[in-house]
Length: 303
Image (cartoon, rainbow, N blue to C red; front, side, top):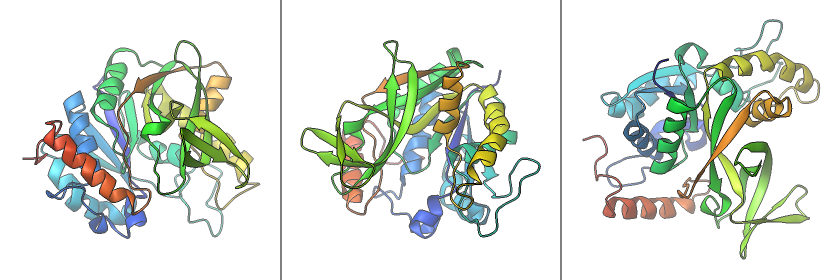
């Protein structure tokens, strides 16, 4: 088996910021969040990264990100195109929305030849998380055993608005039972709370385990994602042809329900950082500055 591969979902990165060149750096050296993730991944042992990008952004991505890191890790690019669909399906008229995170991973199928980790391009995950997922992929991942890094909700929340998080249920052995997507979680005194209707809230303790889309899969999961896409489309296109999305937790939950796999939850106390709201940027910059002062990162990552 080849060494584990890092798959980075970046297809929506440019659109969220109005273009890759508009992404604000988080330090004085011009680094953006993905620089720190790749740096941590290389330190953990990863030697190959597959970026999933929008086709029209590949050139900018190579210039903005790839050129900085390609001397330190092998870099490949995959395109998440709407027409990557199973035989017998076509893109619904008027559909412009991407098909979701599981579809994004599927678009990298031909470039992934080993157990693989999956991350978001604009999330700061922390050093420990990459070490844990890499060790799992090297020593424990199999056709029936996969993993997810679990964060404490309190380490992922913002005070500037609501967030979406995959709330996890686990058994006593820290195996995942279910991921439930909560799309509106807000900070509260002593914890957080989510709502489904905008009026009624359910309290969530800060130590609730949540998924931030840092997964570790055996290579066989790529085939499962591909094989299950048709069933998803048959179910979902009838109800929501323009906006339905094929998410990684959807695949994971189905396979857990079938008893086909186990997913280990690798707990971390790393703090997650991201820029959900403009007010989050100063917080991220301050955190990066402190981590550099504490010796966790060099001033220039790719020197």
